[in-house]
Length: 403
Image 1: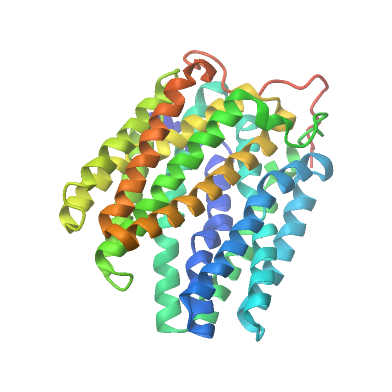
Image 2 (image 1 turned 135 degrees about the vertical axis):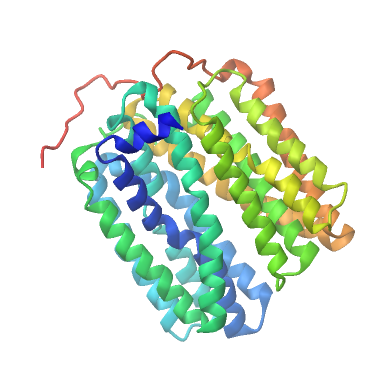
């Protein structure tokens, strides 16, 4: 744990981690808040699902697009513009009397305007710490973000059921404006400037490491989405057991990130971490409706999640030019969003036909392919043991703002 304590003593690191987690916290709330709100307004889960799909499409488009904009117009203007549009969308979604098509339109704009905080902060990190601290910092970041997925749904469920669904969305909006303002005001956001990329939009996705990270992230988050669907089907969406099991899954990821995050990244790091996920998932199939068994097996599976994400962040950082890092992280995030949507959809179909075990079969299949892909393309994985994981230098000076 010494690596993490040293990291948190580095000037600005603890503050910017806290700021970006607060700014991103609403996005651990909004899917469930939108679901509850639209279902309450329309009495249809199907309608709510369509609205969530529109929101996800907007998010998938926004990831690489707004990340690219930060190299053109700088971080603060892009973050501020998207924050204001997203906040306006949330207020309209919560307070205006909308029909289903309008909920879809507003949800799409809410997703399209999600501030690119994750790509921004992961672009800033290499400028805040030395090269030996970068991989542990990515791991700490991936571990800490589990707080969003543990606490976000809990806050949403409590506010949405004890007050109302409008209040749940407004609480998310309050976190967005408070956390977003805190992050945007951080000195590092104004100090670090991303050079404008000279490459065509999307070209960075052709980098083997970026493509491999995007593919593996798609499979990893698809696994998690299928697990979530399977667990909810096992206990019912009204049971506290579902939330507890999924919290254990996230806690496993948090623990795994802290335990494994300081290890150097080699060519086998990603397959091994994905193998941990697969082993835990395949064990769930033995007793798919046992509360205790699912807690144990998903704790095991969770141990591989944050470390795997940290490896993906590190190999992207080490293999692309600084001007392309934000866009590369944007594409990686889009892959994860698509994985979540497809994993949930396929798991839902198999749950309807085979029950809970069908969703867990889908999760196991996604996880297995998630092991095989980095094994088959291992030659694309860099060996970062004893080397610098910082982005490649651009061919021109990178300006640093002094105020």
